[in-house]
Image (cartoon, rainbow, N blue to C red; front, top):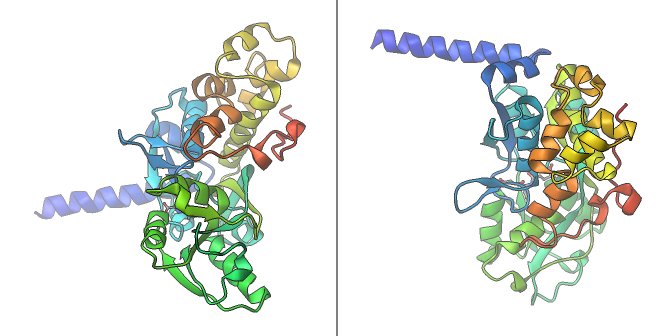
Length: 341
Ligand SMILES: N[C@@H](CCC(=O)N[C@@H](CS)C(=O)NCC(=O)O)C(=O)O
């Protein structure tokens, strides 16, 4: 008995010290030594991260996690997904429970400056919206005087909703939930008049409702919700990896590199930008302490940003979202990869 509890205590202390080391400039080394990336995700948002009928995680956030595993290990399976609630995600990252968050997390000044964390590149542009019953007669948010509104705790959406109704001097009743699926069930059951969260998540939730046509996402947007990956603040090298990995997925789309043509582009492209990106020349890999083929491996295995987007939430999926702002800047969107040289 004693022996076993001592072993358990030792294992716990060991886990703590591993987490401690991982926090200081060593996340990449710790991930490599562990043989696996631990990625913090949300658990119930169609289009971003949701298990399919075979229990496989599907969504843009989970694809980005897999891609980061490929950049490090050239193996998409070397990632463990850790679902985290909105209110615990940042403490879980800070304590070393996960290496990175790809978790529908809006980048804000106070999150960036006060949590001991850092956010990386914007990979998704969203805005807060409301979903109501299609036959509710509500056409705009200001029609919802005194309404009961389902919200998820620990989100920007809680504050955005309160700020909006205060700004128009209109009362409303918030009802808070830990998870999105709970808020969606409450909406379906009539416990609230509206669900307020990021509009893309609302599209995902709507697509998973028993009858999506019964629900409308109001057209107004009440905030900017730019998503970025988050990492711990004290590890600049890991920040570089996550930042430039995310950039590379977007840059590949800008350059027209796809899973289907990556092999040929690497062999034949005379473009120095493409040759650098795909590791024909070694400097980008050297800068991140990754294999020179890291970005090539990612695109070959999972595709560029657009391929990931179209597979997980694009117009041909049940979520059915047009690219909109999440299109490359040369085609009218906001995605703009910083130069990779
Ligand atoms: N972008 C907002 C909201 C992110 C968020 O956590 N959204 C909720 C509501 S859609 C969510 O992802 N829940 C995930 C879950 O319940 O698994 C933020 O960063 O606070």
